[in-house]
Image (cartoon, rainbow, N blue to C red):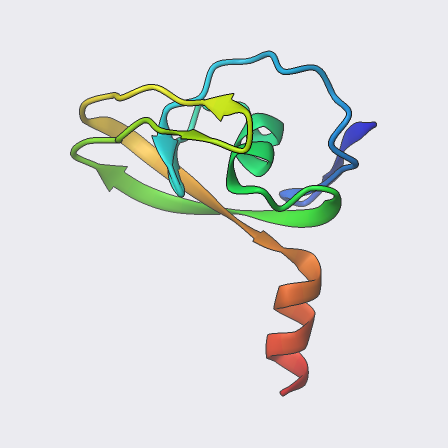
Length: 93
């Protein structure tokens, strides 16, 4: 099950359907499917945080972890993902 926990936090066990468009690799267009991005990055199953980022001039698509992303040109905003347990460890140290 994949769900939005609010506050840009999400939980995904990796079993949600492979649907929804996604552009980029590591840094994704803001309209990309966040759960597909997590699968693409190979961070599921987990709880993760979506970090909003500024525009990027180009997004490069790749095939990773069974998910294919597409290339895209300039887009107004972006995001990247961080596992929540990674954030907690960085704060604790």
